[in-house]
Length: 639
Image 1 (cartoon, rainbow, N blue to C red):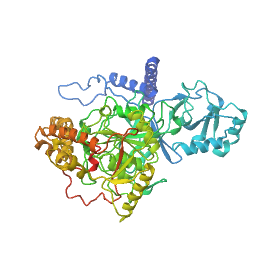
Image 2: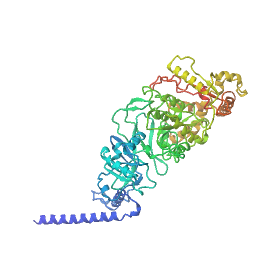
Image 3: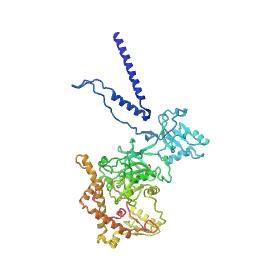
Image 4: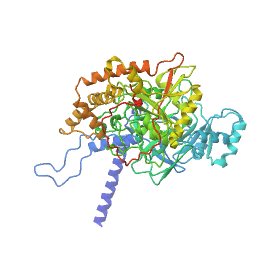
């Protein structure tokens, strides 16, 4: 009996002690000042830190010569930040960035209280006129936007004023399974949120943007990106589960692809969030950029794992890309490049990273290089509108041709090359790849300023390396294209033989040398020696310092080119620059002169890509990788 009384007494004392500790914890929570702006999660973490720092550990077995009870920790510093969340709606994955866009209905109205789920998909509907119907608006949203779906009609916010419109919304509730319809609060956010799909928490009133998540099954991207409030970017912390094969079926492509476990996840915001205007001609256009452009807050790889490891996040975005963003383009990711923008063949040259998959043909053709990811990505995905790449000796033109998209090498503009990993500053250019010429023209205006308003077309048409007989289907297409182009220009197509013209008009500086001998080493010298100076030497030095004197792995193509560059005399690059200047002057006099009322007096056409097969598994060209010496008409734009 005495033992039972003693046990009851101990239990009573234990309960009293626990109650005191509970009250102490409650007081600790209340002692955190509200002005610190801590969330519940952050406050709980802080309390945990305080307890860890003040509570002594239980007595242990002890260590000879030391006290059995160790002193309390001085403090454990750690930080947990919320990175948003991933949800699934109607079988589609969405990412909700942590940034709160506004608040809706955080009051205790009966309509809001009746919504008991922690998160609701909602749609803000902009009812522009009295004769708008919900059916028409939904059809319009579905045709314009791949993020919106019927599930977002669970809750509707609208700005309608007409009783007829509001009655239409109420009448159609059952058709779409709408739980609630609210007028859009005037003070919900400043400025008001644009129409479109969002996610909303009735309990807190917070609203978040909806990013639809796509799988990069073609392997075109290196990182998916989302913007931060300070103008920098973060890697999107979300992934789509890969369960099966997927089909790429659009008006220009029908291909079944096999998703892999290594596929990147890319998030895209609703197109309904953006409206074009003169200041934002690219509003809502989704943009991917080659992984040699600086993007604020993000590291670049340049196609090299060692380079990615050593490179810090960029402090600012490359001016060329920032121009597109300022014009309304939405940056969604960085895209694969052959290593350091050198020419590479898939798959043997692509050692550090796997080459993207070209969607054309059977899906196993070489994607071209070096703007491989930008070309393969914009050729494959309806949800990607345009990409930015670079061209030094064909790095936009070749991938655009073999992937079947529009892309060009524009005129050289050094101002746009800041914040770009260089191959050759004298020949590097920035260009756009798209599936339609209208967007390409708008983006080009943004990058290069107002395009010339030429009222006439070139009066001469020259064909270089064109087939003369319709021997193959490809030859037939090329010849018919040239004939149609000649009709549009109201001229005849003439064959241009550059070697013949050079031999009869070559400048005195050539001293009788043929065009191949005079300019054949310009490209390999300027690319090898300049990139080794600007990129390679720094990479070697930093990697050696961090890795006990070891050197980084370099893909075969840049490795061979850099080695060849070191074997050439230092004076050779000065000679290359001199010959480049001489050739450019000769070309503008005897090849393509400026026009009186057009950009040029003539138009040169040559077949860049002819539809020939080049499989990812070979056969590997016998002379590759090698030194890109020699001369062809495709070098003229670079010079």
